[in-house]
Length: 97
Image 1 (cartoon, rainbow, N blue to C red):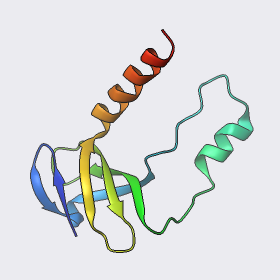
Image 2: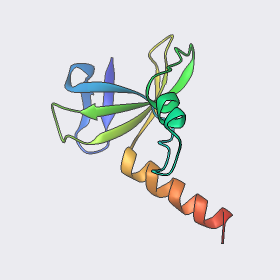
Image 3: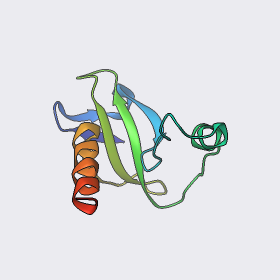
């Protein structure tokens, strides 16, 4: 499998470390312990399109969100996690003016 890093270009998957589901959101500091346990431990194993968090260990050391089909390993797109987080913050502000 090859991942196209926005900074380094197309690279072998061996340069990256998989860090899990990119759709989960970390609870804020005032949340109950149960919310943190739910965030950290239970994991789904989806079959099909999925947003995943990857770290480019062997390159720019950037965090990436990879949209990938877990059955075929086809990659539909890659974006930096920073860009994704900034987009989410803009959407939250727009929804709560």
